[in-house]
Amino acid sequence: MEETVLYKRIAEEIRQEILSGRLQPGDRLPSIRNLKAHWRCTPGTIQRAYQELAQQGLVVSQAGQGTHVSGQVDLAEIDSRAPLRRANLVNRAEGFMLEAFSAGYALDEIEQALEVAKDRWRAAAQQQNQPDQQLIRFAGSHDMVVIWLAGHLGEICPGASLQLSFNGSLGGLMALAGGKAELAGCHLLDAETGVYNEPYLRKLFPAKRMLTVRLALRRIGLITAPGNPKDLRDLQHLAQPGLRFVNRQPGSGTRVWLDGQLRRLNLDPSRINGYTIEKLTHSEVARAVAEGQADAGLGLQSAAAAFSLGFIPLVEEPYDLVTYQDLAGQPHLKALFEWLAAPANWSQMAHLPGYDFSQTGQVSLLDL
Image (cartoon, rainbow, N blue to C red):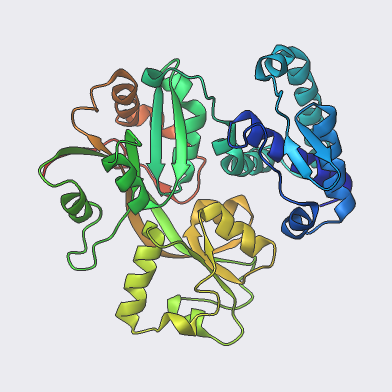
């Protein structure tokens, strides 16, 4: 990425951290040396980003004391400039579109790339003042349909929004159990029974009344460089010398499935170069392959397509939304589930590759 573009991205990422409250007044920002290593850029690029933030009144720098979030950040004043900021944002978006069109990209390619980018930034961009009754807190496995729903929930249930936390299937169920989410997304395969999700619900929610809604069937497989230059065909090929693999984190449904298959194949994970290199989302796995950091990863077909990568399908799995039965009647959740159950709506998601919506909306009531 060109330095003139990168410094703006760095500044905007820090700015969103401040506006979202993740960085509080007085907090010290990372040193220029540390950020230089993280972003793989020159010290001047970081300095330029900090200068832009200082001009906006968001940070202050003092010799020998580093750079800190300003103690007088006025979020209301920042919001008061919304029309001007919005116009500036539209101008930037149009410039990006023109640049992309000039480079030969089609409109659907640009839209797909923006969805992937939004995936990375969504957590920092959540609105903090949304009434609780209008907010669905989602936690669980990363999924492209979930991301699409988050962008369209306001059309399905006016005024509602979906706050996303992608922390893996097991993490999503634990967040639901701990009262930190109203909705979890999971695709956990129980190796002993060959059944998805329900065995884990019985362990984590004993004596509870739970409800699951089928979101979709989705294809998981090996994400490769275009043309599959390593000639990969199955998981056993991951142990070939010189291959660089990128993995998902423990607790994710994809990692659970992979580890189960490796045990079935009697393939020691230590033989897979990169097994311990972990990414939190399918998009990050695909990005690592696209940027040449890895030769292969395990992930969604839709993530591979977003980066124009190769894909070798290995399994079609169910992905379910999970909540408590007594929460399912709340207006925003009820509206979402009813929308998913209507086949006429499935065509709106059909542009996402690697999904089968024939079971979408199916409800299971579990008295555990």
